[in-house]
Image (cartoon, rainbow, N blue to C red; front, side, top):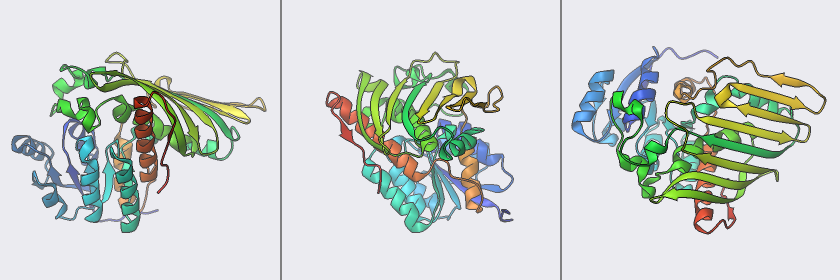
Length: 354
């Protein structure tokens, strides 16, 4: 499919440390993108990001950025502002990439799904694992029945984020970043601070993508310190009656790749997807064993994929592998997990559809 010759005008709302480290450089690398508008609080920081990347316009008022009618908008503001900013961007007519978690409120997540559909806009969530090499190939093989009907999944995600959710030290990489994030973004439980919204969201989104299944109910527990969850464990039921064991923690030492592993057991085979080892194997009941052709580092986490997909989709190309429905199901699962933990593991129903 051919691309339009017109350049895509891109704006960013919430130009904090990760937008400056990943999203904006990913946009700037593309010759078919114009960096139009940028918004964040703090005039000094705003001027810094505008000048550093060469945006045409900047304002602390995100509505002024949207009034310029950009083609695409990246929302990378603190978690609790995602709904407000993504909603306004969709209404303005832009295609939107929203940082994870999509929202902190399940109803608001599904509202964004409906709004994107109503306005005919693409809405993507920034789940970078979904865009890594061969993930689309693996998803297709599973959908085509490589392991039969999925009956069980085991998901484990351990990332080097304890210093994000606790204390003042933060990540070592922040020392060289354009901006250092506000601690409240990650350490205030009232604003979505903690491992579940901040990290487990990656693993759940990837699980729902690979299996094509929706969550239905969950029983979970969390390990908390100072009101912040640092580890999660849950028993999850999926829409075809499959069962899944979900776990995650923020305890990987800094400087190491996150341990991300998903195992799927089907009626006629098994998938072992070990992202931290760049390894994926499909074992079938027939005796056939297939390994995906992964190279070293292929499955190391990065998040340029969603940015590229946003720009491509705005030009009638590309594929959305982190859809708004996937994002809403992820948020709904996390909300239910945390509620279950507060109620001593009581099973919670998950709102998985509009």
